[in-house]
Length: 137
Image (cartoon, rainbow, N blue to C red):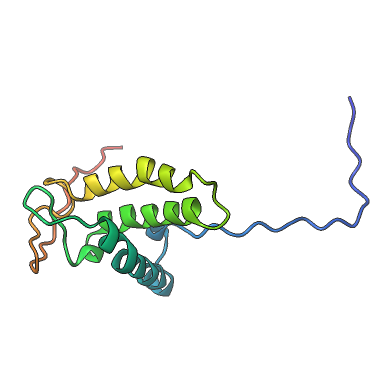
């Protein structure tokens, strides 16, 4: 059996940039900062470019940040946007983002039974989460 001796060079490890935490793991000021940054992206890029007309079959809530599911999905979409469309991304990154992330997430959010079901322009309606019996174990 061969063992490797520790390196004796003065090489310093290259520190990788830290991936931001997913918003559902944040709280307090960190959550608020993440939501503020997400809101800017939704307001200035997502909705002007990809927002389609609101109908009863494709609802949108103007208070989307009050829907945890929407926040989670939009934050994931934004994280993928940053990774796949930034200056270091591959040339196919934007197409991958559209195909693998945008279409599915927007369809899920805007589904008639999705997180905005019951919301109408100017009328937010909180959804009640389904209940759960106590776990017997």
